[in-house]
Image (cartoon, rainbow, N blue to C red; front, side, top):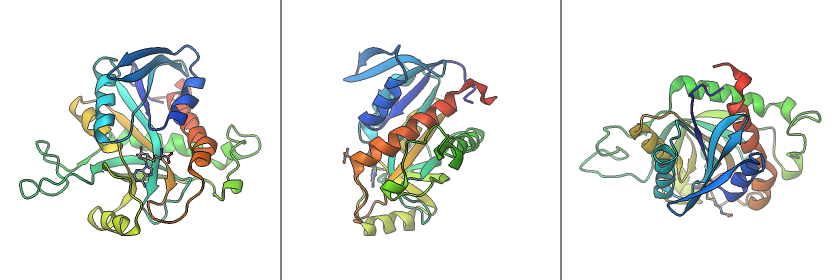
Length: 261
Ligand code: SAH
């Protein structure tokens, strides 16, 4: 469905997610840059560069910059996990970002809190028509049919992980160099950033680099935790059994050429 011609950079947040992409890219060739391995190959017939972002905003910004400059990517898709903040955003759901903010950006009193100095805004937005289509395609890729006994995700046993069917949300994602795992911090984020759905550590940095290079981007996050002290399901198992499977299915659906524009 992604109509932009040319190469697409696919950034994975976790090694397990990258591996599931690479398993589907048998022709991938490794190129080393900036201490990272960029995998150049094909997925769904599209020219792809897949790479691990590394954790945090600066790491993600470096990775994105190399994709856009040295690797000549014309579009970026980021896939990873995140903490759920929205009241209805549960573990196992997916959030498609339609806005991103750096929740730890605060140059006040020189600039209003959260504003990106020099850009004059706090929130960055991927193209509206793109996020609307991504929401539609991802919702279909993770539909109850896809998870049913005959679907491509039939081996994802949600009930055994205590999860319900995934819901796909579209809204604000907050990023910062902090792993959020306290209810009080979640309350602060919800208070200052009304409508925020999820918190993670890279998306808004990818957005800022793509904004600077005037390049469309998509940020997808599967919710792995509720960003509080609550005991959540076994993280490595969740990543392996759910997040990696969703990441590959979502990205393949987005790249599939039969989706029209
Ligand atoms: N590797 C660790 C977990 C990493 S979680 C482990 O195996 O336990 C950190 C990554 O997940 C970051 O890339 C971040 O973007 C995302 N993330 C998930 N939940 C988060 C939360 N509650 N707060 C911030 N980042 C979160």
